Image (cartoon, rainbow, N blue to C red):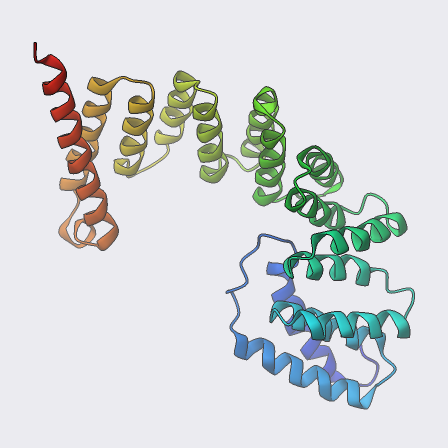
Length: 296
């Protein structure tokens, strides 16, 4: 966004947009930029507003910065001012709806997103945000519809879009899990394989007790991994759920074997030490249960 005659204002807006590029959609990490960065941007925008008090765009960008700073009150105030100064700034409704969602006021946020999508039907980011609001309001079918439409309208949907859609579809009931899985497979194909999407698919297969399906998916994802200790632990856990203790024990053994084969600098990090302890505890438990079961 250009601010006529104010090069510094352009730089401030550019910095803000670089941050918003990471966090404009719900579910993206807020910690990518520290509070000091946002506070500096807010201070700079405030100076620009003092020089151009009639700029709705400046108020909008400061509202976005306040939202990233989790300052809902000032964000909502600046959004209102931005819209008053520039009634054509319809993006305010979308951002205000997201702010209300993040402030745990989803019903109010829904009204804002409904208004935004009335003005800009089929806008993918608006649909995506409204989908999250529907989920917060425990309306998974409406959420799934919005997530489907968002992906269909998006030129380059991200992994988060596919995860959100699958979560909403699966929340509609066990009968919808197959559709959720097909959607995850669609996303995985688009991204040339995604461990996040594959992990979620494995979890969904387990949730409907399709253990063989979960193991097939896990085996496929393991083929691409240079390190497999965690995957063998996951395999063992699935085997336990499937009531196959001997197979589970063997998978734990394979995990332990790979942990012990790691070079010391990798083997001695906290996460691997904890994983090894968990594996050894599980193996001891399974050995005890098998021995106990063999007693007359």
